[in-house]
View 1 (cartoon, rainbow, N blue to C red):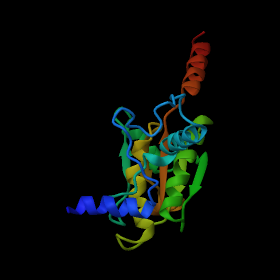
View 2 (cartoon, rainbow, N blue to C red):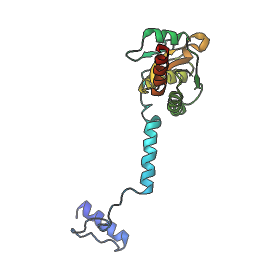
View 3 (cartoon, helix red, strand yellow):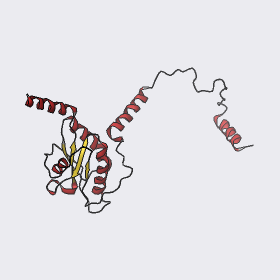
View 4 (cartoon, rainbow, N blue to C red):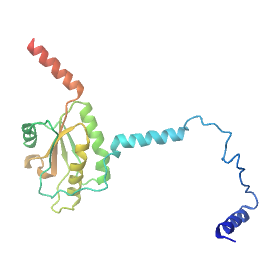
Length: 198
């Protein structure tokens, strides 16, 4: 007797004769049941998964190239003038919102960043300051967080540029972030300019 036949016999013995094979014609668990769409539980799981992706699911914490602790962070999208980045670096814009991530676990920071960016953008804020700290060693927790921020921030469409702050604003332990103008703010700008022109 083969191993699969013995397993089959053992299973039938354990079940006490209550097991009957399905006929080939009705080889489904419940062929009479028609599909009426997803259940409420399935819909709830889908909504939760969708919120996960929208919230922070796209911010991976799998792997990151660690930024040396004494290297400043610098990023700007194509089309953003270097003068804007320089002014941002030197604190030329007021911090319209701040996010403090000092001594917070990486997962908590990953959850806090998307709503902060999206809420600031929704309220037409443009210059943000994220305080994260900087360790002396390349693998220190503050420097790991700093490295993840350098990886995560460019993934937001709203982020135009970011740079490490000056010592008076937190130095390498803080990052200035410049958000793009919302469509509402652009429309208001166009309206103001047209009024000036007459």
